[in-house]
Image (cartoon, rainbow, N blue to C red):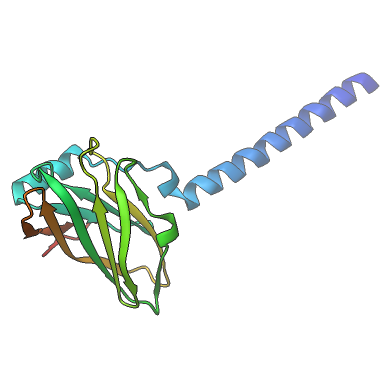
Length: 176
């Protein structure tokens, strides 16, 4: 009988530890859904952008600004993007900016209310299906505190062109 009791106790401890691990894992997943999201544009979003003839589209959900570039933009030398934000309610984490491995990133200006980023070296196989960049931010309220205000492309022939921008957040259809 003692052997049976030890075996039952050990089984119960294993079940309890497994349940605890599962509970922690489920809590982590529900609190951090962005951890499992990919930075790949959906086909529906891509079709929408082509139909609306936008050059750049982005999402700023889950405290990440996720920016995509239309594959209609060819012969790119560099892209300069201005992001406006409220410094009292929003902090941009420029240390953790993530780009495609072939791109060079420069912070042209980082002042309160305005961050200007420049991306160059598009010759190394830029993938239009993936993000141009992802920029983490933290906001004190559940509003969109970081918005792209302006984007300009410099083509390989030296021509500057302003780009049309579209915010893809669910329920929002903002463009400029």
